[in-house]
Amino acid sequence: MATATAPVFAAGASNGFAALSFDQKLDRLAEVAVRVGLNLKPGQELFLTAPTDAMPLARRITEHAYKAGAKLVTTIYSDDAATLARYQYAPDDSFDYAPTWFYDGVSAAFKSGAARMAISGTNPALLAGQDPDKVSRANVAVSKAYKPALEFITRHDINWTIIAAATPAWAALVFPNDAPDVALNKLWEAIFFCSRITGDDFLADWKQHNANLRTRVEFLNNKRYHSLRFFTCGADGNPDNATDLTVGLADTHLWAGGGTTAGNGIYCNANIPTEECFTTPHKDRVNGHVSASKPLSHQGTLIENIHCEFKDGKITKATATAGEAALNKLISADEGARQLGEVALVPNPSPIAQSGILFWNTLFDENAASHIALGQAYSTCLIDGDKLGNEQLAKLGANESLIHVDWMIGGPTMSVDGLSADGTAEPLMRNGDWV
Image 1 (cartoon, one colour):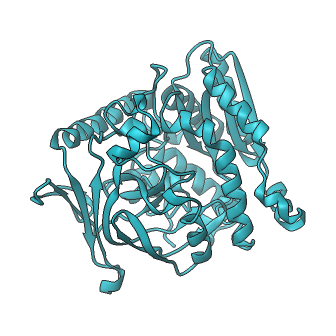
Image 2 (cartoon, one colour):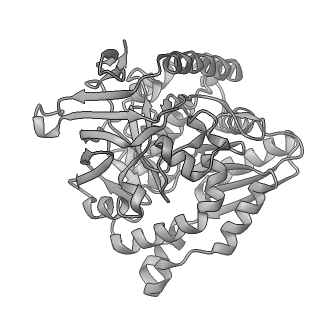
């Protein structure tokens, strides 16, 4: 497992940032979350979720939200110990249940115009020792209950964002050879660095970063590729671990990246950090085989060395050296769980990749490498997709599912070609970077 040293973070930080106290750095992160991530507007409500260990950041975010004119901030905290207690003591039928009344309330909040923010940071390995069948059933129950609210997210009807907080359990997984306090400090510094708050004018830095991503998005949209081909050899040179995957793109696909304007007219950044350009693949036009370049942490289970074979859009075989049962439960969640809802390009020189850290957290790891996502497609990545019904979206190739799970396939050995309808190939990436 790779670790990062202090100079990696220092290289991207100003002297002014290095002199700041931890509380001042945390305040910067909270300000970016509200002003760049959400771009929260006066009079908006904010629905915020966070692990209990992230309470200091949640409080700072709440302060900045009210300074921005928030009408009300409502925060729901999750607790790892309480989550484990369910798996240890709850009756079996508990795992087929989710509080629909709660998710109905969330949906009602979004319908009334509330913004959404999630603070990531729970223990990635929390449920690694639990029954994968119970984990899968609980996830399916939540996905069904949450679907009406999730559609506000996948259609980008509201301004929403995800940001991260370092927590002791997460830090111990990322930096297992360090003392707990050292590991926690390292993870915080990595989050600050990757979230681009280390410059003297960090808000201007974000504006420039968004402009750079927009230039790349416009290039890809002008190209109108029919499909993308990802190809590489396995890290050990074994052709069985190689990737050779052709991902067809939806008929009216649109690339997106960085900040976007939500359906409510508010420009926001859905992920802090973000380095990706992404679009909607055609659910029936994915063929070949692909190996994950990083482990996947999904709902408390670590899934390592994923290898999948696709034919006509669907996974026909899926293996993993750890967490394989959880992987197969995941792709059996519903009919669309075996098909792709997103494909994203990320250059290997991104700050997250160059940090040398395996975060065991999709928010970060997906921004270190090109990736694909199983499950639900984003309708906003289709021309006028936000105006179309599910049947119309499906005809264009957009996938529908209860899940949306990203996993990483890119890295320093990955090459990507853009293919025209007649199969003509144009190099897009070599050795993990843009050509």
